[in-house]
Structure formats: C-alpha cells, structure tokens
Image 1 (tube, rainbow, N blue to C red):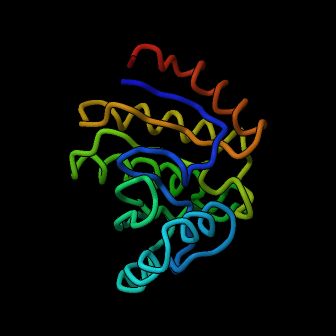
Image 2: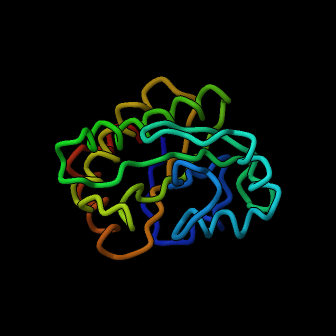
Image 3: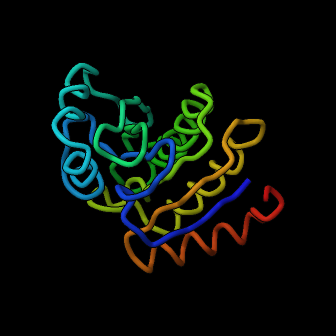
Amino acid sequence: MKIEILRTDITQLDVDVIVNAANSSLLGGGGVDGAIHKVAGPRLLEECRTLNGCEAGQVKMTKGYDLRARYVIHAVGPVWRGGSQGEDALLASCYKESIELADAHQLKSIAFPAISCGVYGFPIERACDIAVKTVLDALRGTTLEHVIFSCFNERIEKALTKSLAQYDAGSLS
C-alpha cells in the first residue's frame, strides 16, 4: 500500500478515481468541486443531473470524462456547525464510503481532497485526523494499492503529514 500526501491540483492526477468535495446538489460549485467540473467538461454535469443529489456523509460515482481519472466519487461533506451536529461522523462516512465504493469497483488508486476544509469550515487539524484514521481503517482488505491525499495549501499538507505519522501508516506500506 502506497500512501502519499501531495500539494497538487487533484484534477491533474492520473489515478483510477478522484474524490470530489461536492455539495448536495452535485451540480458543481466552488473550490475543488468547481475545478473538477471545469476540467471534466459538460458531460459530468449532465451525468450528475441524473443522480438526484446526495446527502451529507454519502457518496455517488460518475465517469471522469475529460479528467485524467477514470471516475469521480462525489462525497458531500458536512458544514461545520460547532461539532455537536454529528459533523465528525458525517466526515468519516465520506472517506469510508469512498473507499468502499472504489473497492466495490476493484479500483487500485484513489485521490482525496481535504473534504469540508474550505468554505464548509471544518477545523483543518480535526478534519485531517478524521480523514487519515478513517482511510487507514477502511483500506484493510481492499483492492486499493495507492492513496493520495491532495492538498491545496501548506497548512493542510502539514496537518495530514502529522496525522499520518501519528497513525503509523508505515505499517500498511
């Protein structure tokens, strides 16, 4: 198992599937969501229109269209509301369900953004701990061979690196 943390544009990664930090409509938005829709092209929006949205904590998959990735898993993260509205469990569910869906399709490589860390306001260090722990737990016994955590800034990169070291991901390599 190879796990990497890269400060890069997730839309440019050559992996089987990238995870989109989507909103509940699945019809595009800002940040990672907008970037993925822009690069994937109009056919992604057309397919997303057929999915009837998605609830927080859940995921749905589409083709990748003009992306280098073959597929996109759209994960709807929670909006941070202070931590007492089940936000941790909903965020963990995004990562767990993404791994399970990729495994069900026998995919080998997946790239995650920092779900809910942009305009949804989830505290970055807390979100990174949840992401790393959930992914490491969910990976056991799957077809996945390569996981990338794609970061858009240094703060997220450092938080992910700290979390990965804390959970001893080296034991999976």
